[in-house]
Image (tube, rainbow, N blue to C red):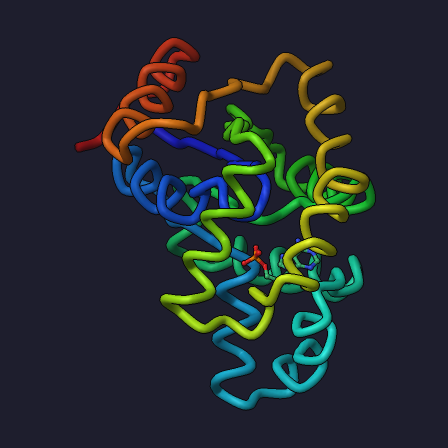
Length: 196
Ligand code: AMP
């Protein structure tokens, strides 16, 4: 059985952690555009050089480039049985790009997981992560910019997917296991079957 999933939530909502857990549970590959970009920067590839200063400033990488990276990644063999996208789409333009790509393959999304976390909680989790991981885009100023972009550009995609009946809104407060359990329950209710 295939599962094509998105996980959407503000920075610091825990979507990376939950996305990886859910992908494993449903037997699909987790693709995080943020991770792809960070790996490219670390490896010093051409992509890394192009995106480095954009990411450090907390801005969005242009849609054309981001959507090309995602199309390429989702065309690999390990994504044939489905995927969980974390951090993409990030705005309406990317929603349109993804729609076009999936419909060209006669595919569609099964569910969009919305992780609901209050702004104050996201900020304190990001500050903690900054102290622990030292990510260059986790400074206070850049965090504020990224959260603002989330609210103005990313949150509206939830209305679009909500109108299609795809959104499962999940309370993102609680232990990691509690949150995973909530997501799994919501996906089972949509007819998806865990593989493990
Ligand atoms: P994340 O780890 O998802 O918070 O992503 C880190 C950074 O990578 C973001 O602040 C953006 O600069 C860039 N990025 C990740 N995903 C996207 C996307 N879908 N569109 C544009 N930029 C992105």
